[in-house]
Image (cartoon, rainbow, N blue to C red; front, side, top):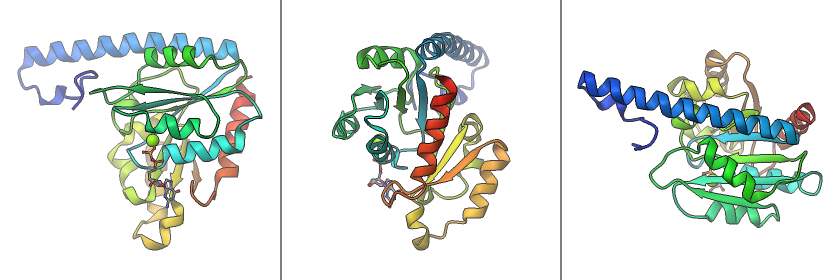
Length: 236
Ligand SMILES: Nc1nc2c(ncn2[C@@H]2O[C@H](COP(=O)(O)OP(=O)(O)O)[C@@H](O)[C@H]2O)c(=O)[nH]1
Ligand SMILES: [Mg+2]
């Protein structure tokens, strides 16, 4: 449970206290929304495409990112913001591709917020017309609520997590523009109902674009790269 975003408010039974906690949570989100709008204006002014990658831990965000950067590097400016509670392991994996990365450690916090992303963007000194890829903290709940000023949330779901996750965590799938269904190379080994998963995802978000990927075999990555290029064009 995070002490920052109010995800524990459901535990509080006392009415007066509950109202106060809900008010604090609302104020926190309003403050974040204002900062996110400032980020969005900055990204628009600089022609930067900012993508917020969200998922549960281990779905393959960093592996997908490194494969993506290998395909995109040298074509336009790239920068990565890595969010984890602890360690700089993911930023190290990103930097090994030659692309600059800033690691944010959130400590007890379970999501990135707009202010953290602004500071990381300043540290990266990303040139105009580039792509900022933000790997959020692994969590299918809180990052859905915190706008970072991104153009799109991209939700990654791996087939090892089960087909029911879009229904169990609908806010995240509703907030995303694109879903990468990752680790499809493992499908032959799993009792994963692909059609049910796609139907569940579309049930919570009829406009959701879905690309099936394998970060390890490269399946679907051309389509994902083409999506990024089209979105970058749209915000240039
Ligand atoms: N088989 C398979 N494994 C993958 C794929 N993508 C990631 N992995 C593995 O899943 C684990 C977690 O990946 P990671 O990128 O660290 O996930 P993150 O926590 O979302 O950043 C690692 O062992 C990866 O090698 C994939 O498409 N197929
Ligand atoms: Mg990671």
